[in-house]
Length: 481
Image (cartoon, rainbow, N blue to C red; front, side, top):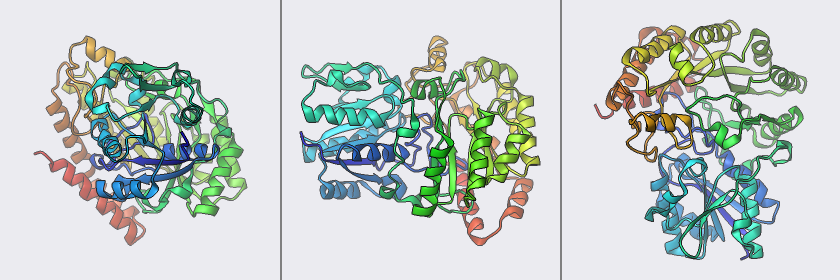
């Protein structure tokens, strides 16, 4: 097989965070999440270029385009193979893309990537909906796609390609050995941003283009609900400061992007790395603004001081629960008191905050959930998001929910916000949804929050963006009521 042209895409199936496999949130169902660029496809495209493949990237949900646009692009590109980024909530609908492709040309090699394939039972792929899928990738797709393409070109037995699932000539689903995690992240080329429409991915307040920069991979934490250990491993693999800053400079000077999300499982995990990066940004006088995520127990005033000096304007915290017993049960390793102190330090440093909360764990009573919602009101983060826990296969939460008998359905087709997969032992799914909505009303639709937000607005464009997010929130709160 020649395999010289590749069509890499997010299918026209709703706005979801597809490019970051651990987070599969429905963007439109959130309170303040902004869409992030398809870096996963960008990395794959850059790697494919190294083996002589000409890639094309399309993000149909981000562009607001339909299946008709998808068909037109496919017919124009005439690819030899395709790579689709999927999510667990949308996977059944995503497969329509491969059905259409096979109807147009059965010889096209169809490849899908996503966290779902790292955790699902391989026999699930025997379902008819997956018939047009040739190969599924689990693990870090950049290297695996290249290895797969080279094997197909050479006619090599696919069982020798690590990190894939495929159907053999007898119809059996074959799962190969996992591919080792890439240890030297500096050797991975930067995402092919020349193939992306970077203006589609914006900072939520100003509407300026915002790129995602992955600074490390891997997480040593043991949170029972998180896919990170399965997707990225438990060992932290950091990029060098020089490599990160080189990507920042490419974005600034070649793509005119000056706003960034520094993506890591926990950006602030190693204090020395944070400070070294901030100092280099300052030394090079990069005109950038950025946000990053953190745990409430990996932050201090010195880190925040350097982050602020280097252009950071917001820190996002996975606070999860306001009940310390639930924090212990979910193995978060942090406390309510630490959350309060972390947010206090950010406010003192002049940094905005984004608090992420998680409700719906098997043991939770209404009172335990209210502890979380009361904490969210007490912290008064600039932005707040309340997720409902989803028991993804492969996580400890999945096993617990199954053993407690509250897991009635798989995570396929379910989402964090309006369609959770399970009840708790004490609270129904319907009530979880209603409690989330009531909490968001109290957090956002109150005079104090609205006044504080309006006082921070610096331009008509910011006002327009805040209004757009506000309208989205209100629509979600009244949906299905």
